[in-house]
Image 1: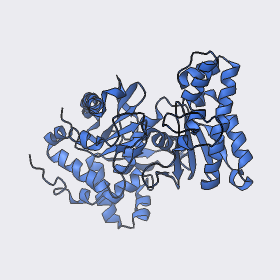
Image 2: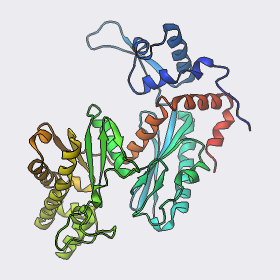
Image 3: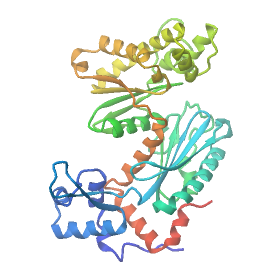
Length: 413
C-alpha cells in the first residue's frame, strides 16, 4: 500500500521537530522556556506545541511547588506514546524487552543463546521474541519507534556490524541492521554492551558529569568513554577497548584474542578463574570468582586485588590522556567491591599527576541487573528525538494515524 503524507492535514505538526526535541532533551519544560529556547513567535510555538499535544507525543501536567502557590504547567514526553524493542545478548541468554519512552520496561522475556548457532538463526529468535513483545506493547503504547541491540563484542557503530576479533564467531561483518530491517521498518541500532552500560550509568546516575570513564570488569575487560556528555567511539568505534592493551613482560599470559600480555589476560574474570583453577579451586568465569570472594577465600581476594592494580595501571594512562572527573567501575567483578576498587585507586593515584586526580572520583556502578538493556533504550531514544531525526518520527507517526494498518507493516513475521 502506498504511503501518503500524514502531516499534510496537520501542517503545524509537520514543523514541530525543534519544539519536540527541546522538550525531549529537557532543554525546555514550559511554554515560556520554549519561547526563549526556540526563538519562535508565541503564536508559532503555541500552534506547534498544541499539535504535539494533540498527537499524544507531548503532555502538559500541573505540578504543585513545595512552597505552595499556583501550580506550574510542565511539559514532557508522554512515555506511553510509543515503545522500543531492545535486546542484550549475553554469554548464554538474550534479554529482550519492550521499553517505553521513559525508558522503563513494558514487557520482557529471556531466550537461550548459543553463539555457535550463527547470526541469522540468533537474529531470527530475537525477531520472533520481539514480535510477541510488540504485540503486547502496541495495545497500550502505540507505535514502535525503534529497535536497539547490545552486543558483547566490538562493534562498528556507523555500520552496525561486529568487527573481529570477537567472541561471537561467525558474526564478523554480518549485516545485522540489514537483516533486522526485513522484519522491522524502523530505525535500528547496534552497539557494544560497554558503551551502552556507560550511557545508562551516565544518564541515570551522573547526568551532570561531562567527562566520565566507565570500566566493565567482568569475564572480559572493556570501557566506555563519556566526553562532553556524549559517548566517544573514535573513528571506527574501537575507543575504550582497554582489555587488549598489552604489557610487555616475562611470562606474559596468552589472551583469548591470540596476543600475549593483554590486560584481559591478567585481570579478566576468565583469567582470574584460570589462576584459581591452577590453585585447585573450581572456577570457570567471573561469577565463580565472585563466589569465592564472597566466601572470603584468601587466594581469590588476593587475585581480585591484583586484578584491580592491573586495571588501575591502564586506567591511569586514560586519566592522564582524557582527564575525566569520574571513573565508574561495573561488571561482575565489581561485586567484589573494595577488593577490586582499592587496587584501581592505588595505581591511578600513584601514577597520575595531582592535577589530574585532585577532583577525580572512583566509584562502583549502581547495581543494575541489565544496565546495557537500558543503555540500548537511551541510545535509540536520544537519537530518534534529536533535532535531525525528530521530523522523520513525526511524519511516520502522522502516517500511522492516517493509515492505522501501516503499523502492521513495521512488524512482519
